[in-house]
Length: 239
Image (cartoon, rainbow, N blue to C red; front, top):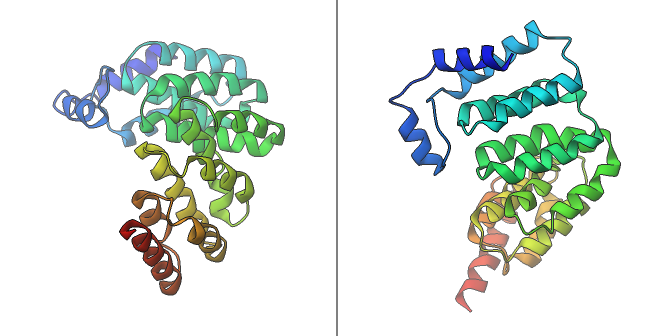
């Protein structure tokens, strides 16, 4: 299966595109220059042709694809984890943590956190203690993943905002862009359904939050709420 996937990836490769993507992601990986839509088509074909794939073979296939330092092979590993996500079990959090640690780019991390780890944590609430640990890890990609794993239910209008708020509170003054962006992103998506909740949480923290966080978070607030937070943020910066 891995060999067949490799053949498909090479069939869609674009040598002219590869250097641009490598530079954009600032990655040490090799790139074939295959676009994400093509990779998603390959993943769908694998799912159709191997609908009976079991968890053991899925994990083995992911390991084979991930072990070569080629961006598209690793992305296919991630897309197949997404495609067969219902097969994953709590024990697979160890695999997901390893992949996140080795990813070194949002292109893998965000998919692993939002559409793979997130649903697994929803199905197995005992795994919240694992993402609690991630939220205080030295690796900022794991800290980002802890927050993004909570994103989808918050976007739907429910979810564990208290847990997210605890994570975000501890990270508000971090200088790492990908942490600042993630806090704002989750607040922005939560505000689509619960703007008052986001406003009430962010307003007293406007003096601490970064500009990246604030600009993202206020996008779906009411005009008065947006103006209030931006004014509080600007006032804090003038002090």
